[in-house]
Length: 181
Ligand code: IMP
Ligand code: MG
Image (cartoon, rainbow, N blue to C red; front, side, top):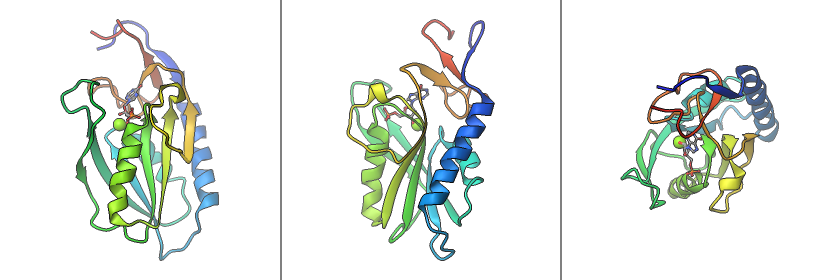
């Protein structure tokens, strides 16, 4: 549990406004062909709360898929290996794919999942991340839709966890060294 006061970095009101802005941008960019749904792939678990809000702002047909990626299998940050542990789709051939994540830090996760997706021969792949820590980037990746840039702080809430906890918080809060016990 967290000791003491939690500092809100992004309020639920700002979250709602930001999700609506991302949705409006996606609505502008994609056509509304009912025979060609937008395939939204949510990177679980972190992106599930954001994805649930985002798809309800879209005014085009959506096919929802999920993917679970694990990075740093042994729990250390010494390796940057990203593995796909589970994914829900059989085919993406000729599809417009939107990969949705909660936060982009080094960029390794989105880059690796984007490369993995290519074997399914999608027509297009775009990237969407609710939060971005641009100062932490280690790889070159263009993220098409970013909600908010944040400083290099560890954040929880709105799907984001600390050791599996706090995903249910409606606001995004900062957690600093020493806050957790
Ligand atoms: P990347 O592969 O380094 O870009 O890391 C992205 C993943 O790391 C995200 O999908 C999150 O699961 C996790 N992550 C990065 N920063 C934070 C944070 O501040 N809070 C919670 N999870 C984070
Ligand atoms: Mg994640």
